[in-house]
Amino acid sequence: MSSPHQHPLSGPTADAPLIRAYRGERPDRLPVWFMRQAGRSLPEYRALRTGTRMLDACLDPELVTEITLQPVRRHGVDAAIFFSDIVVPLRLAGVGVDIVPGRGPVLEHPVRTADDVAKLRERTLTPEALSPITAAVRQLTTELGSTPLIGFAGAPFTLAAYLVEGGPSKDHLAARTMMHAQPQVWAELMDWLAEITGTFLHAQVSAGASAAQLFDSWAGTLSLADYAQYVAPYSTAALAPVRALEVADRPVPTVHFGVGTAHLLPAMHAVGVDVVGVDWRTPLDQAAQALPGVVLQGNLDPAMLAADWPALRAHAETVLAAGAAAPAHVVNLGHGVPPDTDPEMLTRLTAWLHEQ
Image (cartoon, rainbow, N blue to C red; front, side, top):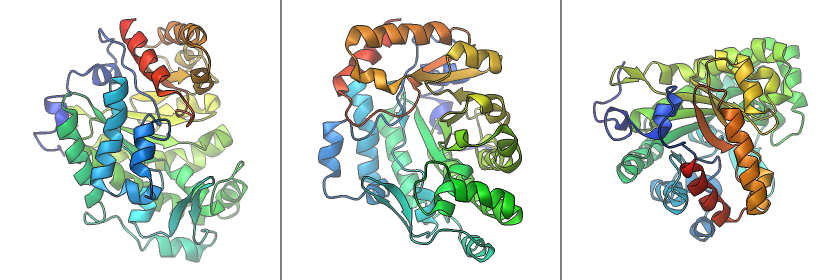
């Protein structure tokens, strides 16, 4: 199956530095973008979000467009990341979920039983429900021109962790218990999550996103054995609808990222992605040894954004030197931009990286 001929990958973004790097080349300019670059660190974002709840903002195409564009305008980064939240597909499927300020995603009813999962499996993501997402992507790709838009979704395990726990958790005990104590229930839950995640990503890419990134924020809490048996197959299934798309006879680049996942990197690549994101704990040359021939993304320590410029620059030099071990390197943080980051530091860092 092919996406529409007018897709940006068939024209404006085909030779963008980010896309060339994602496909294994070393472009003349080192591509850079930052996870959570659109958000609380920007005063223009805070002003725009005043009086609007997070999930309401995520479903307003005009707000999504403006928020997504803000860091591209300010910092001159090489990609926009679609402004959304990992629980947006759940909300679009009719699940009772909200983002509580200072806490995070909270579910009306935790999913703990076979009956709970059976009720979830009655829900689907329809084209009508996805219309705010596709409208925002189409508007964004028009505005962005040759700057690629990266589609975004949370991975099935991270979504399952919130659903089963009922909200944020440090160790995800309830979710990890379910996968062993109720393996069939777990399989049915993850199968449903893979389906809606795949539908969500497919909608973004079909509407014009030039790449797709799957965030498995909590995968690092798992052993390799549990990840391989109970999680990886569903991440593969979630990515399959995007992998099936081709633009100009080439697949759409895909990225996989998790936190604390040094022990999982080969398994995370094996789910079927082109690029693996690495957090700040694992030097990129070590990641390259674990992932020979694989494009890497990362992995500046977000804490360094609060240091002075000489310290940040020295840290960035170390990251670039380690990233030279990979066939291509997209510079990013090893996690998201902290809310109290001085935006000027990101602008200065981007300009410096582009000079290297």
